[in-house]
Length: 306
Image (cartoon, rainbow, N blue to C red):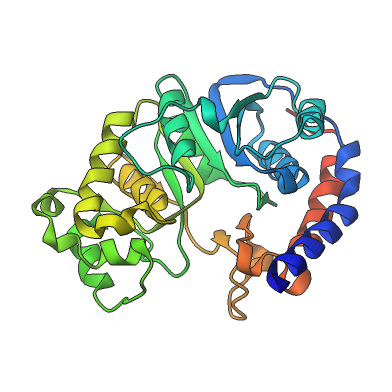
């Protein structure tokens, strides 16, 4: 209870200090070949707008925007979003057709992406992210129709064979479902022919035509053989996303530390990063998120050449 109260207070303080974002120019789509997808909750609308606007500014184009309402968005939230992204399509989580996968824990987001990626390149962007500098590697992947992923914390920085990834994970005895599956990949005959990357689902690019519901269901059932009932836990969607991207032709991991998540490691040069995912446990640690957010908002207040 104390943790939740402190988190709510920190988020309110962040929103108060970033309220000038609501005076920055709106986003108007000018590139229908690209779709930006995010799942958004009631308490993170301002954070989401900051993530979306900062990404579009550095990308140099405004994609079609699709927002997955996790069920908590209010009429006021819808109004705020449409005031800043007038043509945004908001999909309620109940509108996403189910599949033979777990429910919740971002699975509906992945299924929504699979429906959209038939016709466009899809970028999945978490609300707690900031794009603070140029991102040419992302632009190159989009232009070449190659999938990409943000790397996990201290992950092996390449796409590799599933068997190699398994050997690398043997000593990781973390009980989370992702670690359970990674250290057990070698129990699957299919592992000999599959690739893997230990990415982070907070920022992913899915090449047009690269995934579909059938692939998602196949990987989900494959991993369920390893994790059993634990497959229904948080983290299974990220593992599936990693598998989908790793086995997509020409996919690229985004290189650390230019693209990273904020774990508040003292030796990591976060100040020099172009893209930062401010993950929940450390989001407001040391004030870096607010500091970077204020810099981004000041830039957004100036006219962008898009």
